Image 1 (cartoon, rainbow, N blue to C red):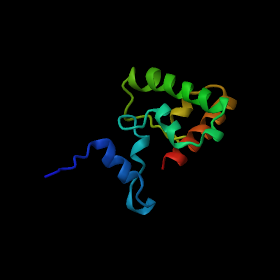
Image 2 (tube, one colour):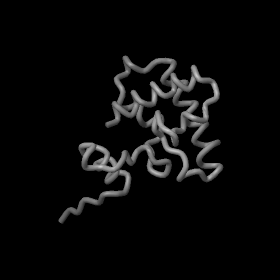
Image 3 (cartoon, rainbow, N blue to C red):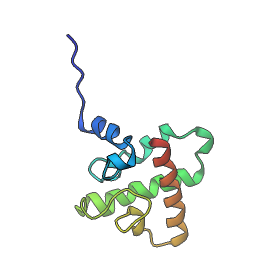
Length: 112
């Protein structure tokens, strides 16, 4: 007999692929279940990865460590590119924030 085991991340990935009317939100945007930013790169065609992509990943990784995990803000911040709880709201430079939002949106679009 073979039994397939499914962990939380696998279950959340399946839930994220449900039609919008069947899911309350994307699980991958929650800080405690988000996909590591660099793991999303494997879903993006290499022709679309630019210096902005790698810079955005560095910014997101640093923000995750500095603003979410080290300050225990799991309930007040998420990994969405837009909205009141967006991790991108911590970026002071508006030009850089816009670039990171676009890159994060693109990464998450390819991921789903």
